Length: 79
Image (cartoon, rainbow, N blue to C red; front, side, top):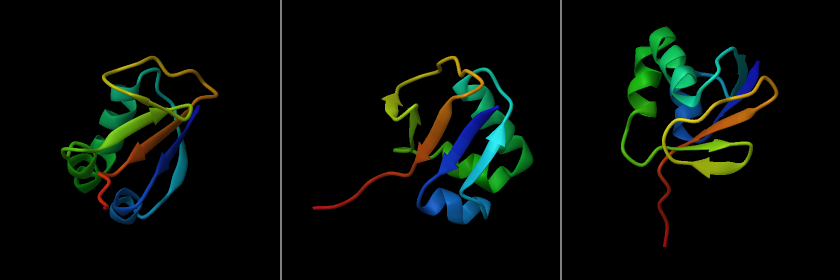
């Protein structure tokens, strides 16, 4: 199972920061989380949310191995 991490507001919406999810692709993980919690699904689909796979930002879908770490990162702001 992949370890899923939620940072910032995403963790607040979900009520958790880390859990294990069985899925073989990034979008499958996102869809699984959205099906369980529609508010989290909406937050994950928001503009600016990024996904890191094994600590590297990934654009688009990608395969996920059983020992993978998947992190959902909220939009960043700053100055």
